[in-house]
Length: 143
Image 1: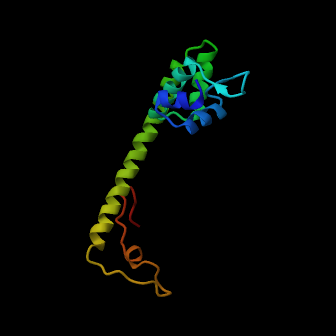
Image 2 (image 1 turned 180 degrees about the vertical axis):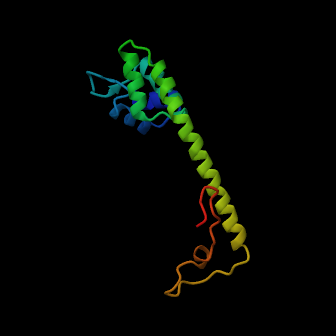
Image 3 (image 1 turned 45 degrees about the horizontal axis):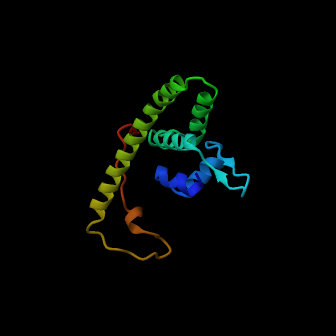
């Protein structure tokens, strides 16, 4: 398969295939007649695996390590479990932070609903932000 054929089969762009090839995740062979990169069915299998791994949050580096284990006949499954187990608490913390950010944004929009727009005057840049009183986070201590 040519790059475009592989891309279409997997539902990605040709640039995605080229990028994964440059990253060493896909291993095409060169067509001896024209020098084009040719991909086999194993590339389609790997490309679909890469897509699934990306939806689980794995980085390309991690995917490369997973594929490397598999290419050497070793099961990458223990490493995959460990990576996700380590990342899950980080993701949950990030979700909490994003929920707090969303609440601050909602509060700001609510507070700004009736405030007039102001032009910068040398003392202010945007009065909405400058006059917004950020609510204290639950973990902040009062002095």
